[in-house]
Amino acid sequence: MWPKQESGPQFCPIALFDDGSFPTLQAGIEWPLSERFSWYNELGIRYRKSQYDHADTSILAPRGFKAKTELRYYITFRGKTPVYPEGYYLAANLFYAREKHTTGISYYYNGDSTVARRDNFGVRKRSLGLNLLAGRQVVLKGRFLLDLYAGIGIKPRRITTLAKEYESGRDGLITAIDLTIQGIKNEAEAKGGHSIAGNLTAGLRLCLLL
Image 1 (tube, rainbow, N blue to C red):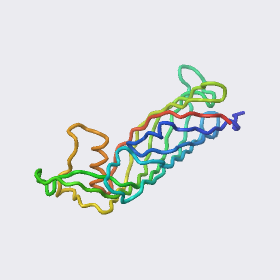
Image 2: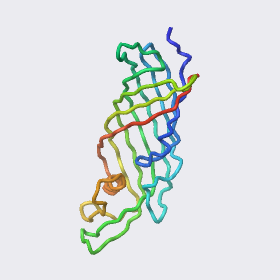
Image 3: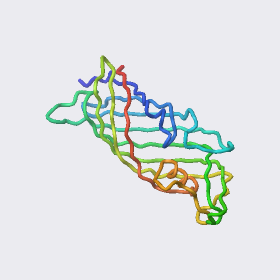
Image 4: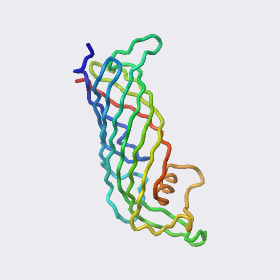
């Protein structure tokens, strides 16, 4: 019989430093459904300001959460039969994230490079997306495991702003010459509205079998 008692909590240490999105205290739990399928659910709560949120004033205090539900299929690899919870798996997940914070940008008013201004404004962001990924769980010692995963997906999102003076299409956003996380975030948040972005995901989780 499938060992249904061997579900277990999983902690996500990398999420503590996910400033590209927003840093969270994040954990989940996996339940076996059959010999090859399991169901994983995860929740994360924002616990600090991101290093990319540069602002001289506070309009919206940083708050947010992330939620994820994931269906996993453990696969045979190199002739080896998967034995839950070890082995390789393919998965699909749905995720939802909601957060708010204050950010600051520099821009050229009316596109005039001689008139540089600074704008601090509040940002509210919601995203709902889908990822396809592959992963592997390996035993570390006793009932402790390590879950490694990576995948791609799409992320439809809605960004609304509060007390923003910058106007996309009229003003010129000042960004670094090279492509940076800060520049990508500033451009998306300054423009606001609805958009669909690609999503890359990768990380590790520490697991304990119950």
